[in-house]
Image 1 (cartoon, rainbow, N blue to C red):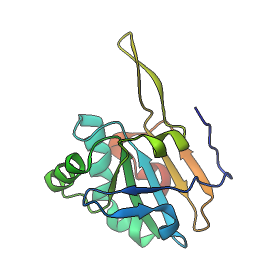
Image 2: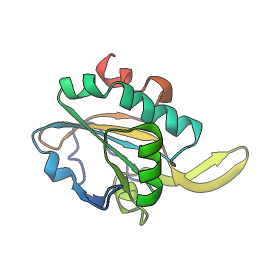
Image 3: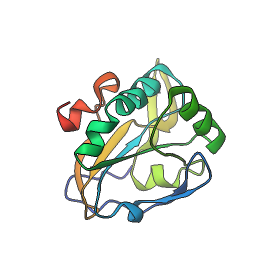
Image 4: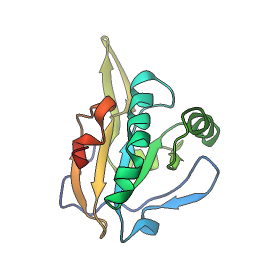
Length: 151
């Protein structure tokens, strides 16, 4: 796994969101970006994290942040997740796991004695120039926005 750290240039990416629209990091140049990687649509932790970002979305916008979620789920799965929880930000369907691998968040995991490949829940705060400001690897799913905006 790649270990990106603050001060590194964020890897460029282009992916498709829940509506099939192309989303690229370059399109957000000039804005701060909250790029969050999560394992799957709908499990309790992933839902709590997405809903916390939704509930703090106006505060994030007011501080100049744009939010982008990424998981290996399909566009259709993302669309249902967004509709079910009224999420106001795009979710990229990285079914090929290219963005996940470029950011070093795809790899071996252990859960209840079982090992498997999966997404390591991680958030990258990227500045206006595409430089990583912060890497949050210990995500508090219920209070995630407060981990970087003090909400």
